[in-house]
Amino acid sequence: MKKILIAAAILLSTSSFATTNNDLNDKGNLKSLLGKVSSVQWKSAANYEKASVLVEEQKVDVYYNTNGDLIGTTRYQDFDKLPKNALKTITKNYTYPEYSLQECISFVDSSNEKTYYVSMVSENSYLVLAITEYGEVNVFANNKK
Image (cartoon, rainbow, N blue to C red; front, side):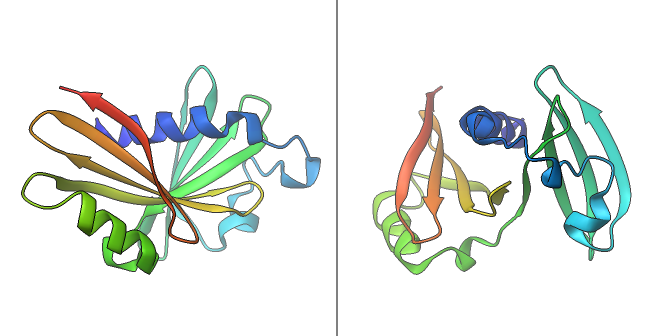
């Protein structure tokens, strides 16, 4: 459920950035985008299509708009590999045990810009933080329980 929330949030936030450049229309040609892939599974939704693949034993989700244009890719990210500035901000403002880390993913859009998304829960809320490549942290979503 949490990953679905993050994926939906990513798609909603990036749908205006989806490109229509035919060079990036990579649907069905995942090898040119990711290299050696295996275990490809496709899923369709109203506003996007998703290919879940394995790349070197790591799960990667590739999102396309309904025209087949690349929106971006997501993969799990180790929390301690986030930019240093982000780690400082998060560990200062969202401390354990008040907040518990749920999931950390990286999202690379069709322009090759990377954003990290970290989901955390507290007793009262489900929080998603968006983090730039430079370590700037913003609250992307804060859903009260």
